[in-house]
Length: 100
Image (cartoon, rainbow, N blue to C red):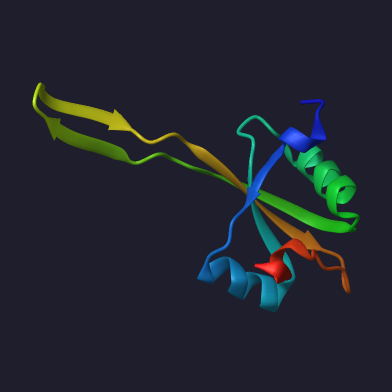
């Protein structure tokens, strides 16, 4: 992927991600499924102007969903997602998470 602005889709803001942010200086982002760790590191460094220490990724499989409608029963699946856990260098911070 060449366009760095399309790699990071959105920040993940949950109770768990806030706890990780406060204790380990680690931020959680939802990223493009085909992005690798090097691209994620470059995107975070360029977009937010911080020094990245480490990047970990995980793929969240989509849950199966079933609905019943007038025409019968339909089974489908939610889309898969990829999350990146980005650890910043000591003293670095991202202001996007502070505003929420």
